[in-house]
Image (spheres, rainbow, N blue to C red):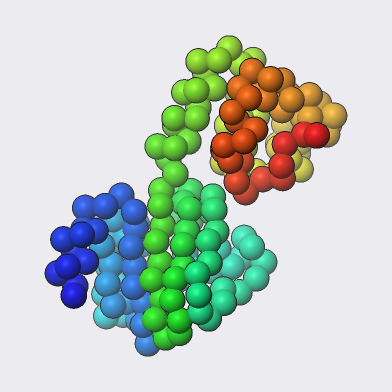
Length: 171
């Protein structure tokens, strides 16, 4: 089975990890080993699990499928999918860097102001409106104005989910 996993997912950009026996690593693809280190046959420190639990404020359920979008793990952002039933857990971490770069390129091509680009970049990083206001020392009304201007210039941004982890746009 492991050779099938390696053949199917070994070169994938998606980080793939299979845990069993209370967190012991049963399988890691190359991307996962590069991100987390080689924990094959060892108990994983579960930085992805802990990061997602901390960010969401809740423990992962013991079974089923759970999705957590736009989660920061280490210094990167991922869409994370947990699948399984104790004691087995399949974890998929899809890196969002290329997706972010594509959105930033779209934003740069659409004549956004310097501040709108700055706000778009912070949104892509998963910051909430409150954190953006604090980071840029701007009011809620000012942020709302910039976001509404951004959505007028790039209407598809409102519906395409580029702000998965943030409070929805200004209304």
